[in-house]
Image 1 (cartoon, rainbow, N blue to C red):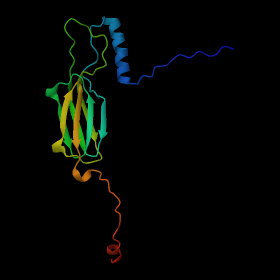
Image 2: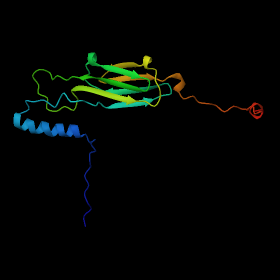
Image 3: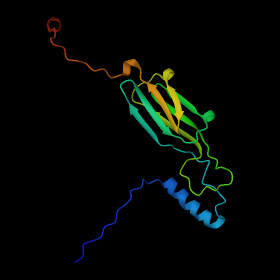
Image 4: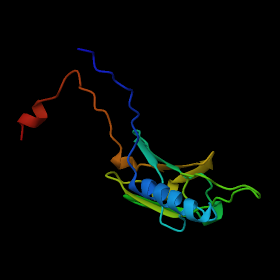
Length: 159
């Protein structure tokens, strides 16, 4: 009996919108020879990353081609909303054969469990990544409490 042959597998993240767009694009390319571009004008949901430090939350959104003028960031005591337009225009004389970059408007809203100082929120955009820093309210920060060497128990006993 021969040992069974195995072939390496590639793991791909399932994204139904991307997969449907790819199928649609392939079918239309066969019929129209690639004259039409990828779907656009749909709401996008860019990938985000959120991390927390004792002082602040940091949110990063992957938005290559962000139209800086359209950017709308709104901070509330317990949340963040950010939106704008992502634009892609192919250079003149080329045909886009495949693109997984979004094109159109996006809006992401996040709820936070800890109150932030909305007046102190800062944002920056570099290399296709939008970074928003949300400082926490002082009273909401976690404070490490150290154990005292001795405890005065007489005050507690006199009550």
